[in-house]
Length: 338
Image (tube, rainbow, N blue to C red; front, side, top):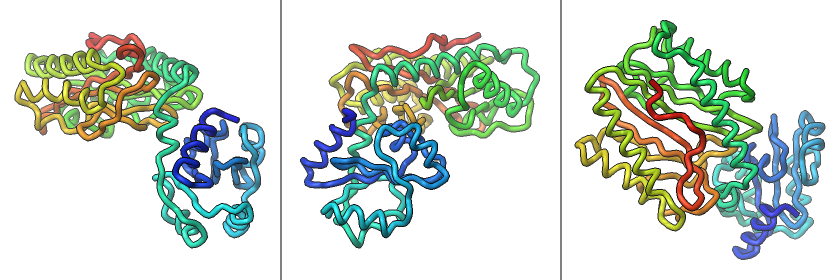
């Protein structure tokens, strides 16, 4: 049996649960190798099973490493579980309420993060796929001629996504951000139909064989912009240098935050220092003030400090770090790409 499933079964036994219900597509994919295109109910128990939609049966039967049955109805699925003597059911925290409501009258239910705990530590194969996704994204970025580009933000975003797909990505790992001028002070700005202004902030990533990458670079032009860029770069570099197994995620956030606060811009750093990624672009743990997860070898977490001056401009720099003896940056794209 797959090690991930074995570990989850051990967690279930320890907490006196008999099964674990998953519906999130990437969780089902992580456990079985099959990524649903419709809906699916993955139930981890001594004999794990996936109930898939009729539209997905061919795909699921081809890709899944565990047994697949066609979903008939909630009643029949629940009936089969009850026939096996299952009374206590763990669910993933992201389970939709509408699905929870179908099960709550027949089982004792509690939300558990067993699957998140498994996904925190990446296998060498997973890290290799993240590295390949990063290589594709960075190669595609370098094909852009930002300095001489007279296109609009929308056009640059489109060109970058097209380049990533041409270079081997299945698609972008999230909506590509191209934010220029005053719009760069919006962390999740949407590309506009306007010619590039200064500075130019681009946050982008590729998906390769299901796994995500994530980078951000900001190209600055004025002395004032360079001053802010230098502060963010210092926070970025020192946070990465501080990463090592055995310390807490919140301690890395503090390293970056203390530097930015020391220059008087603490209230302009308005998000966490980083997040894990894998099959999803945002996974746990993350480098945030409140995350006390102890860093372990095999985790993959981004470092992305930023300073956002409302109405003026913003600067963010982001790289993805594999946790080994220290933090190893995935990819080789320089921070200053001029």
